[in-house]
Length: 364
Ligand SMILES: *[C@@H]1O[C@H](CO)[C@@H](O)[C@H](O)[C@H]1NC(C)=O
Ligand SMILES: *[C@@H]1O[C@H](CO)[C@@H](O)[C@H](O)[C@H]1NC(C)=O
Ligand SMILES: *[C@@H]1O[C@H](CO)[C@@H](O)[C@H](O)[C@H]1NC(C)=O
Ligand SMILES: *[C@@H]1O[C@H](CO)[C@@H](O)[C@H](O)[C@H]1NC(C)=O
Ligand SMILES: *[C@@H]1O[C@H](CO)[C@@H](O)[C@H](O)[C@H]1NC(C)=O
Image (cartoon, rainbow, N blue to C red; front, side, top):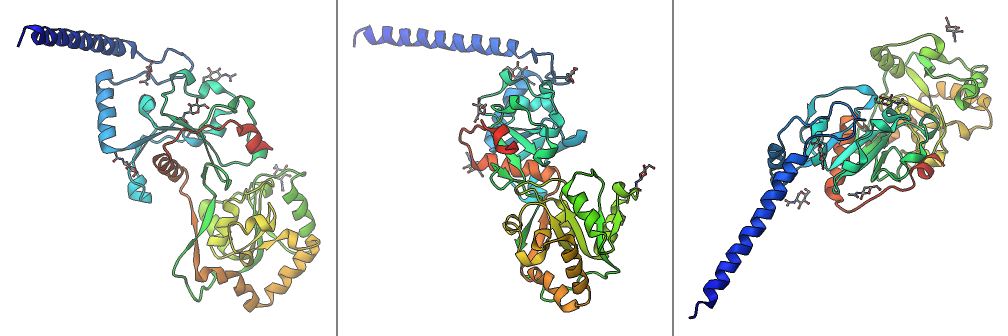
């Protein structure tokens, strides 16, 4: 063998050293550049950890196949330190939920609560520092009437998390879960016929107009801020269960916007009388004979007459609980379950996704 191969080996070694040198230089440059948020728009997110630790973190995370979801704005200013409850509470494995903004760079998903951004986009993470794998999740559980429409959000998000069935991550206020049911459900003891608990009141609301007419024909036991009768959480349960019927009237009328007013009543053994989207829409979520819809009657007076009739017929009243033979009401645990459900979604859908019509999808 000539000296040729030896030269080749030397050249290879030299080349290797050069490449290694480049990597080291780049790595050092990377460490030096990780000095914090350049933009001054977001408070309290100066990186507290050393860059090296962060890299180790990411590697460990990949080993553990764990998905990190950062709640950028914890809804309604609630604070929570570190939560890792998806597995223990909801049997969703592999999720790490955090509110620690230092973990922004390694978060697979960032949940942004619509109401907490308000009109001020400076409350958002700086978009130019958004890692390429990261998905921004728009979370909103309010109706379009009570959510400010921001055109600027149009192309910002990757996923929608909303009560609507056609959201990327649908989170209805409640659902019926199949169970080996109860054959003879007995509703709780009743001492009132028809009740309503309400705080938000404006004369032009559909529910206010309906109530004003209805109460001329039937007695309604009313509670809540709108009637200067604020109640505690405990009162809420005892009032709701003690009424045969409950006005589950939504504050505004939108597709799929069926809220806890309905599911609480249903779950607690009180028959909901609904005002909201169409009966057909309700029946996408629950059985048609579990509730009364105001649209079933030509007038509030007809509804009042019907309820008064039912009051005299226990057997017909009991039929509203037939659905309990096979189902029970499940409600999501605000807000932590929403975050876990979002994480679960991210783990199952690793593809590229964008929402580029948020303003028209939600507000039209
Ligand atoms: C995230 O990474 C960017 C550069 O990609 C860096 O400027 C910023 O300081 C990092 N933020 C945190 C919170 O680590
Ligand atoms: C990570 O977890 C997901 C969801 O459980 C699974 O589909 C995937 O195969 C796992 N990946 C690795 C590398 O273990
Ligand atoms: C937006 O929020 C930032 C940070 O909280 C604040 O400094 C700024 O004054 C706000 N701007 C408006 C228009 O409210
Ligand atoms: C509730 O109280 C306020 C102020 O005391 C009063 O103006 C209002 O008319 C009251 N509303 C009802 C429904 O009684
Ligand atoms: C998320 O959406 C943004 C904005 O539409 C887009 O630039 C980004 O590439 C998307 N990322 C992923 C991981 O889908």
